[in-house]
Amino acid sequence: MFANILVTIDFSDASVRALRWTARSFPEAKLTLFHVLQEVEASADVRQSLSGKVDPEETAELDAKDNIEVLAHGISPDADVIIRDGRPIKELEQAAQDSNTDLVVLAAHEQRIWPWDRYDAKAEETCDRVDLPILIFRPTERTGELTILTPLDLRDGSEPVGKMAGEIASQLNARLVVLHVLPKTFQGFLRAASSAYQTEETLRKAESSAREEALARIPAECREHLDVQVRVARGQPVRQILATVESENVDLIVMGKTHLRKRTERALMGHVTGKALRNAPCSVLTVPI
Image (cartoon, rainbow, N blue to C red; front, side, top):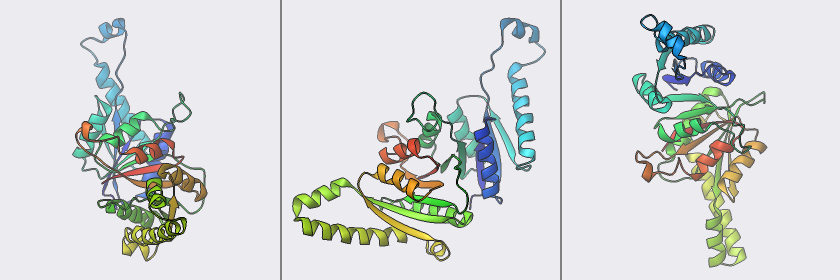
């Protein structure tokens, strides 16, 4: 389903696991391994002794390329390698454009400073700024059938999320759980405008309608052979998403992100997506909508 996938490599165990999973999950895709060089630090004596003989930055690039090629040899020997020196996100955007990338894979790195910072801040910033599907890979210890969760808010324009979730579930032969959350504001409005009985009856009708609409967002050709289950919950969206991840043993979340070019016009992918990205204990794929 993806023709060209760009996998970022920083030589950590997490990025190697992400590469192995990507190569195994999408064997038909063309992989490009991407690395950004760290700034080369050398003492004045070393720089003077190497002056006119060896460029430390050129040496670092050659070393990185050699190491990546060795890494790729047993995983994806046909992968291309792109090595850049500069601002990581800007260089990643350019590399994705050069390689016609339709999916970027980043490994999640746990933050050690604050217990609630599950994901690398750089990964979150990448999801926010790069107008492509971004997979933040975080392996789970579960075995057996994969489970994919796609939270849908059923707004116009969110159809690509359901389509992506259905296609990936088909590709990975996974169980698909579709979640829609009725927000508290909707429930509060009903309680203020009608009796308790009428409110509950209206909520039941809204849940039934949401189930049908959410299921319709999954392509029919995917529904024919997938195990698709629809859940409608009430309450705070992020809390319900994380509760569903735990109760359904979810391995991957597929959810939408709003991408606007001007920073003054956007709010970091949206409140719900940003919080889910930071707190989910599994992989998260953000899809531009």
